[in-house]
Image 1 (cartoon, rainbow, N blue to C red):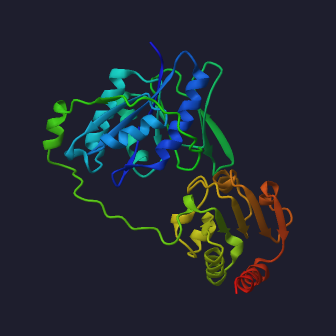
Image 2: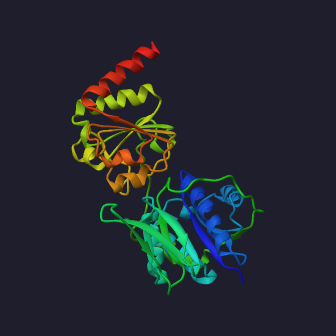
Image 3: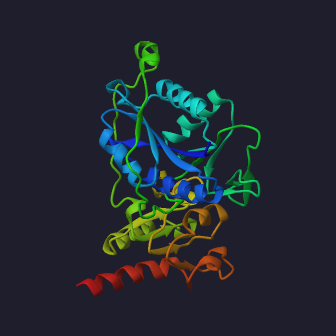
Length: 333
């Protein structure tokens, strides 16, 4: 019997989230390394998702386990976790991967607990060891150490990975093969009174989302003031890009956590990354080291950010940032 790597397909607004395709691409690579006919399969839970299941097949999922019912339209860990745990127990995947999103970070551990296995959370890479078992790489101690987590004695080996860590590759199409889950045994859960999702309220992000921006301007503690942060945002707007931040910029109140980059924030891959006043702590580097061209502005010539930069500018952000804004303005007039 061939081995299986599972990816849970997350759904947002009735569509499969992009992180799912990133994970499928990685799962396909891992399956190739495992050999022995290892197959990539996906789990999908929600309502009205028959068409969406076809997208999973086009990205390499040889089989899709679909739990589809109007009562599953809104995410509920109380219902989703038992369904996924029962599926895994019945089909014995070697590896089961979730997105480390707000949903996946809660759902994955709930499934793992029911299966009495472990889960490596917020991984920055997934590898195989010499025995072809999952080796999950997870930042520790503020990103200063990358720990290796293995779960050799329990199956499935489970992990969650943040969006943006892996690259969504060109689809490796498979024939659409959907196995619909019999939900009759979960009627008591559907009818149970208790924690119940009654609706979803979304706050759309301001400006261009980080994961879509080709140009990212990132500010750290060295930005120095709210005034300079406002200048950074104006410059990003003129360049058609987005602003990002490190933790100290958030702690100072210049911006919110929604655009923080690093082990406790987002991972990005813009074509151009320009950092202003960023020291280059490891937990930030983990979130941007896959960027295309990296340009860094810092007055400290020993700043660690310079070690991962393509272009280095040693100077005062208070002088360079306003001057750069005026230069871009004049070029656009």
